[in-house]
Image (cartoon, rainbow over all chains, first blue to last red):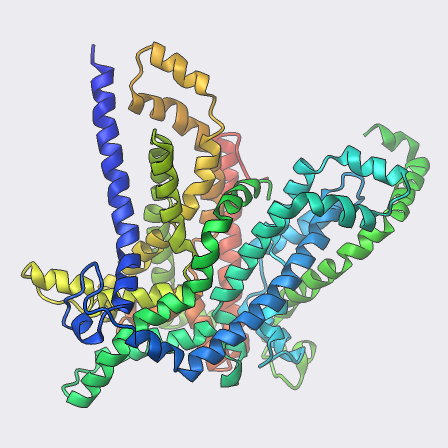
Length: 294
Length: 311
């Protein structure tokens, strides 16, 4: 017949080669951005940076931190992320806990009521009109309230409550005269810290990265979050490429702006990069718990 | 179901159970209010798609015009272009973006060195946390005609520099591949979780029978994750026409419009920038309905073909 151990060895080699290729593809752009941000802009623009920083320089970072728009955007984003995430997590707990209780009458109906919104929506225009009519146009609340709860995250949290906090313990507390809210605060939540961390991470990353709501609801430049400023720096500036320009001054300007782009990408993702190693073991659990129980 | 026989008594029991848990209802009340206001009210408001909406007359006070906005959309010059682009990007993404995380998960699962396995996982998950703005910004930087790395390589190899971002023919490929780069690792998590549930004894038995590693993947691991694949395929099929607005919008420019104009950006442009609320709401509603029909039909097909379905 055929030699299975030999074919297994070949398979292993191919498999490692494949994963090596994937690693290269994912890592290279990330490493390049970091190296480019630390290189001198002139060498970067001559195309001399390939993998490691050339002519180590912190000029680009100095330019980032002296840019008023970026600083304001950063502070705004921090504010929106903290307030938004706090509301998200409280609302998610408020939805998930009752739905996790098997003695909660109406949980089937309420689940359908929420899940339906995942598959059908009124669309952008009616939502926009509503937000405007509620007087939230050009206010922070337009970025926070319309996405106060994610059905997917409620489902993750409910599954966690059901599988990790035995209902029998809760029943025992009920017999001792503990109220439902008391059970939630004193028994369920202390046992659910890992999932609360996952929720904080999911929601805060989505606030940190959110761009669209700010684009459509904010008009006041002083309220712009980081992503809107980033777009101006990273993308709109690139439109200049469409016009063929030979003006030395403009080219010089573009050259300097180029180094800034790489540094700003690093700075914008710094908070996520810093917490990533600490939370990665939790979010895998969160993702898998999400269960496909929709 | 037995309780049905004691109608009155069971109603009393239900009422008592509701009263006993009154504080749970109080707890969930703000959530219910949120869904009513921010999700169900816009569904009610979508009736402006059949009206001529005037802000000062409100949703109810605006006059009905029937299907006029829909007719205008179906007959417009943009209709086929929008449908072609939206469907084209959606299907391209499904075709390329859907299988890759499955292959990646099957491959990661075969790695014997646990530390290398974790390393691959952590690296491939990382891009998921980049924002769309940063991702598109990076795409612009790497593909830039004047100084992007990709064009530097092309020139180095003796090729001609390409203006990737302004040529319509490159748009869909760049859109899909950058999405794969960002999400393949993250999307593989769910398959890896399903794979970790495979009974090791199945593999031992197959080994005794002389099955090669590849045969074991094909006949043990792959079947084990088929239910997960089917569920995710249904969910993705329901989204085929809801190509993410943000990314398309950010990558769009006047030169690649022929390939990049999709329903979502058309709604944004005509509705919010052009203030044609009713027309844009009609276009958006058309999109929602098509998505919903897709979801239901794929779910039905899946239910008929095998036992797995969403409901």
